[in-house]
Figure 1: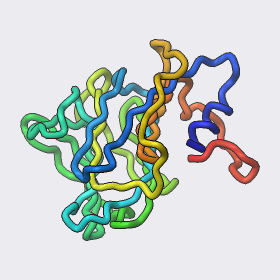
Figure 2: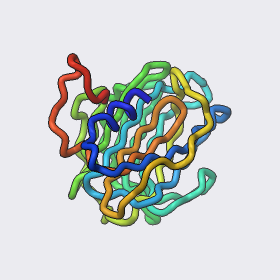
Figure 3: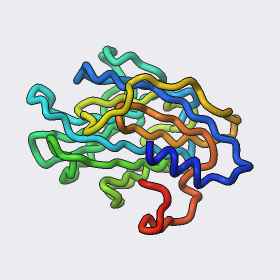
Amino acid sequence: MKFLLAFIGFLPMTTAIGILCKPWDNKTDSRQVFTLETPLKTGDTIFLNATGSSSKSITHFIFDLYEGTPLATDASKNASLRIIANLNTTMMAFNTNTPDGKYKEEPKLSPVKRNISFKIKILVRQLDYQIFVNDKLFWTYNFRRPLLGTVKAIGIEGIKFTSTTENSCPAYFGRRNSPDFQTIVIEGGKVNILYGPTLQDLPPVDNSKGGIEI
């Protein structure tokens, strides 16, 4: 919520903004899928603030950007980007899932651990995803398949939230224009999608003097 309020306060008064909220099901540890009203495009930004699952039955944190809008129970999923971290080891990998199989994984040492808070930021750029972990550039993942117009859902599993707000979501707020960018904020038991200007174009903010909390 602090992020949302700071983001809205930073925008010019003449800029239209819309906010769509989707509640997280706190009763399940399994994969959850959230559909997007409009497909991802260059300039969109995704934030995830969470903690690695404490359940011993959950072995991996998985974050998928799905092509189309699959169900959480679908056995076959096309993912433009899959981030997968083993919660019991020190490895994280990046991949693309297709009907014909997976591309070669790109493993890295993982900062995502069980019971440890972490932050992920993904910038959708013209030719790649730029991935930040805990405020540091961690990996740049080049598109393996065409992106524009295909990614219409996000799937997540293997996390918990250190604190949650009221699980009910308010009605859609504001208005959305067709050229608006999406800023997707996943925190506090909710998935908030903000429509408006892109954060990628905003200048750096000195948080010691107040500003956007990333």
